[in-house]
Length: 193
Image (cartoon, rainbow, N blue to C red; front, side):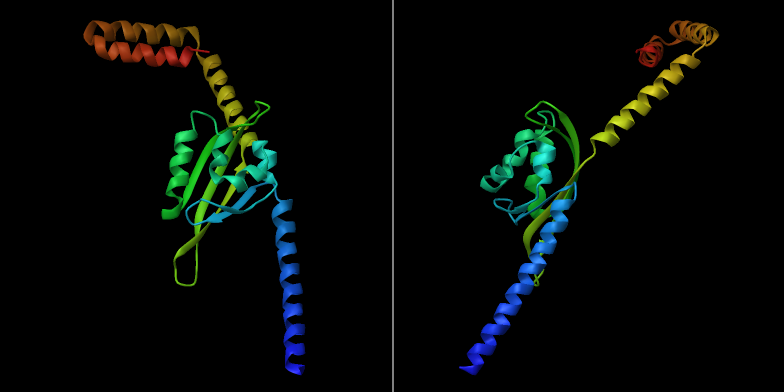
C-alpha cells in the first residue's frame, strides 16, 4: 500500500510537471507571429497549429485539423502547384518556399514557409514540423525599392543618351537585324513604365 501511494504521488508530480511544460510551450508558440505546426510523417494529420494560421490565412485552424491539405485553400492559384509539390515532398526531407496567400477578405499576403522532418530515437521520420512567416512587408518594401530604382534609372536617361542609343541601333540594324531586334526590345523594356 505504501509503494502504491508513493508511485501515485510520483505519478501526480510528473503529470503536474508535464502539464506545466506543455503550458509554457503553448504560451511561447501562441505568442509568436509565425504559423507553427506539427503533423504526422505523411502529412495526413495535424497535431498542432498555432493561432498565427488564422491571422495570416484568415481561416479557421479547425479546418486544418480536419484536413491538413486545407492549408492549400488560401494559396494563390498561381502558387498552388508549387506548394502542393513541396508538401508532398515533406515525408522525404525539408522544404523552403515562398508563396502568396489570398485571404477570404481578398487581402494578399506573402509567406515564407519551411518544413523539416522530426526523427525518433531510431532515426525514423515520425513527425513533420513547419513554420510559416508572413513576409508581406518585406515583399512590399522590395517592390517599392525596385520601383524607385527603375524611376531613378529612367530619370537619368538624357535625350543625348537616347539619341546615341538609337543611332547605335540604326547602325546595328544595317549590319545585323537580329541583334538589333534584341537591342530594341531591351531598350523598350527599360523605358516602359
